[in-house]
Length: 400
Image 1: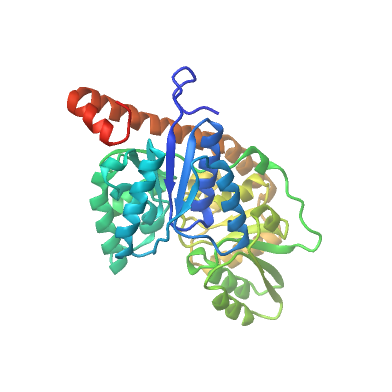
Image 2: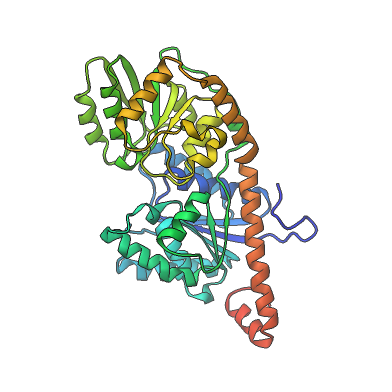
């Protein structure tokens, strides 16, 4: 695995990743990136805002700690801005200086806020990956107005933007404006081991949903679609979330020939064995890992046209359905049960595409190359600044 700079010029970096909630696809992304960066010879630290409540994420956090030579540190963070952010900023500054970070990479709205608001003497170039986050808000909402305003101001404090999809970049430009620094699109990726086939359980359901139990993920739409289908159907819903009770109540009103089971949280590949096909009915996404994981495992996938899903599906993008449309989803479920359409062919084509275009090593290599370009640009500016540049590099914790 390379780092985009060539073996002869390789210099290990000290990288600090910052995120708020260690759950979901964002956390998976940070774990994969940190692991790949360690394998590439870099030293990595992670700051997160909480210890997750579900056992799957807790296990992943323990595994992440084993990859981070510079440690995993918990600094409690609230989702919304508050006075506690001032104290956290001081803690984050001390942490960044202690590890002498070359790169401070913020993930999501809160992680991106902390990474970019740190004073410059904390050191490091500042990189931001939105991961959807605030980009999901509508322009006319109070939250949208507030967060988009903050994002516009933060552009000037960002050295580089990494977007997971072309969709993410386009949405950022549309809602916030052009990035005021270098930007690139680097897709999420999955590892070679995830392409091993998953054996379906003997008593598998027709469909399995895997994800956070939130309205945003389309769980309610899925339950409505199953109720509209007008036929016997078995669903398993895998995941945890604050809205589980709401969805369980909805499931209780489904027709008697629709069986809906809530299975709790578990690793994705274990969950895939519980159903003959995976359904991802999300209302909003960036570039969802669950879709990449399901395709890599060779599972038939029903998904909505959200975020970067068309980039994943490529020539098969016409198979994606409109989000928030129970009738369209019901039709897709029935078609899958009846095996109408080229299910096997589509599944094979998607697996080949993901293997070629969405691998972890491509993601890690691309991110490493982007870091290097930013650091080279910073060094060039400092060199042209003369003696004042040497003083600036000293105060930023970068050897002059």
